[in-house]
Image (cartoon, rainbow, N blue to C red; front, side):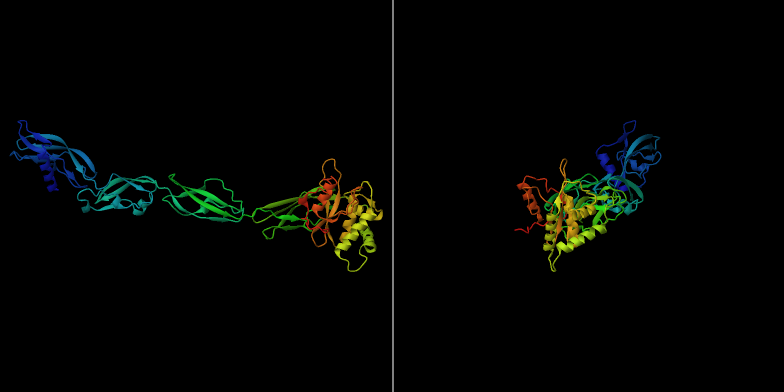
Length: 487
């Protein structure tokens, strides 16, 4: 310490710095500006140096005490006294050497180590010991912002401002995502991997992308860290999404006598191009089988890709028939035995043809009111009186086909305002569903409407300019075969 003071004294003398004079003009001493380490002591002698050109003796005392525990430049009052009674008080400066930097600026994620705080340019720093006042784990946990960090230099605490900032945008690697279901919509973070950043990162789609497709989709993922730094990552999705809804087959209007029961799923099937088994849901909550009326029943099916099909049908609850079903069936069985299956080994085509011919040829078309809510009565009257309208032909054919165990479905015209109703059947003898209409056609438009395709019905309607005649809601009925029996 004394050696340093002597060196500084010589420098100050050579620069004629801070010299003090006696009243008689004699130069007696020179004031010094000492530099000390943290915690060192200063006394009056550290602030003056007696001139080499005087034989006077001087002493100096510090008024109070000099603070050497705080780095920086300080002032203190120093009183100089001479042996001849001279006395004078000076305001002197001194510097407490700082080995710790005033502030440290670090990028987020950079390790916070002691060496970043030490001012290594200071002479003699290696002779000192340094340590954090707080636990090192606590210091290492500091987040973005400004923090006051205490550091022991030997046994004295110095403080530095630690500024942690984040100017580096996040980074990540793109990931190609395969999508095979509309239900499995991916998240933005599915398209990136190995996200690197000193802070937490939010992943978002740059746009609202449609993945419900069978094409590749280019996507841009926006990565944003806590400081607002942004990176855009280009990736893509390979999509093979099933967009085809299931097909519900066999849905038809149901007629039931009041108080009766209904098997809603009887004859109803569901198919899907995925090949998976699809559950059929039936909503019959609006149906009241105890009250005469027409009610809606809803069939729905959803595949694993979320494609949904909904089909509506009517449940027609009718009054009890004027004849019993047993009476009607007794008559039907007699006709079936005498006129339909009269030979052994008859194939379904022959039996269906016999039913068509008997109904077509033996029932006379009359424009009378037939109770459409009483198919049992309509079938009985048609077989007994052998007259009726299109509903009668349909009802009789349906009963006779049922005795042959040939599957059939009632089908009705999609009736518009001002148009008459029309009824016929869909029949499946093992080759798919075909149209079966044994009702007589208008004069001049006679046609054999036995086991016909949609295309053949359409051609007949176009030929006679009666587009409405076989118009029906295709969604309510099983898919029809396309191969004609007549080709």
